[in-house]
Each structure stands twice: as structure tokens, then as C-alpha cells.
Image (cartoon, rainbow, N blue to C red; front, side, top):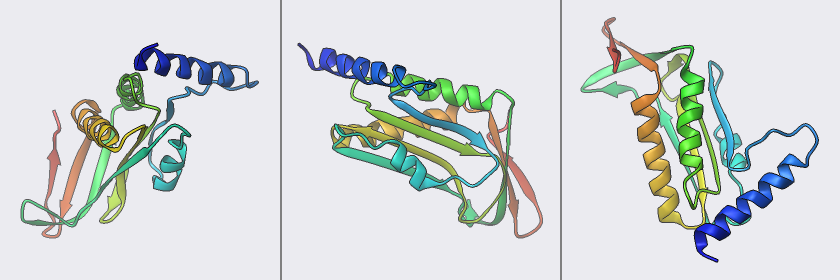
Amino acid sequence: MSEFSMEKAARAEVANAVAETPGSDVDPVLRMVSVSSGPIETSVHEAAVEHVRAGARVLFCGVVREHDHGRDVVELEYQGHPSAEQVLTDVATEFAAEPGVLALAVSHRVGVLAVGDVALVAAVATAHRQEAFDVCGRLVDEVKRRLPIWKRQMFTDGTDEWVNCP
């Protein structure tokens, strides 16, 4: 049996175990996807991707920084399209289906965020570290590319700017 076949069989086994749990509709790989206005708990994402076959868990946190292109940032405001959570789910589902991905969780925040707040969390578990880093990096890039959430930066001089807004 090939490694891909073993992976597929293992996922089917987990899916069957989850399906046999009354009231459970949890995807065995895609553990968490959310777009919310509340703070994102990074520890919850890390715990969500725990897996006995994982030799690596990578957690990415996109954090509001205090500067952008030489200008001092006071806060950011993220505004999301009503389809944002579905788009995030679609992106996450694509990555969760990749061979080697054992568990995945991703969330993006909307609303006003202060410097130091977490705006995006992506967590991935795989058997090996390089694969986990690769998948997590590509996941973050794809989320930033496709997610219909727009960022408004407010600067210390009282001006603002919309970033990546159509």
C-alpha cells in the first residue's frame, strides 16, 4: 500500500470514528475555521491540531504591528464581506485535503484591533516539520490572497489608508 493510500485509509478510519460519535459533524482534518470579532485564542488553535501521527505542528500568528512603510500605526480595522467565513472554509478545505496534512485550523479577526492584537492564526499538523512549515506558509498566503476582508490602517498623524481593498 502506498503512503498516500495509507494516509487515505487512516483519514477514513478517523472519519468513521467521528461519524460514529452521536451528534458529531467534525471534519477529522479541518478542525477549526472562523471569522469573528472577538480575540483569537492561539492556544486553542494549537490544541485543535494535536494529532498522534504528527511530528510537527506549526502555528502562525499574524499580529498588528506598530508601523507600516515608515508610518506609525495606532490601530487597524478589518471589515469582512458576508461570504468571508465561507471563503475561509473553502480555502481551509482545499489545504486540509492535501496528502500529509493531518490537522488544520485557521481564523481571521474582523473589527478594530490594537497594536499587538492577533489578526490571523493558522495552525497545521503534519508528520514532518518542513511539510508543516510549507503548508502553513502557503495557507497564509492563500488566505491573504482570497479572503474578502479589507484592512484600514489608522496612523498617529490622524490619517488612514485602506489596504488591498478593491
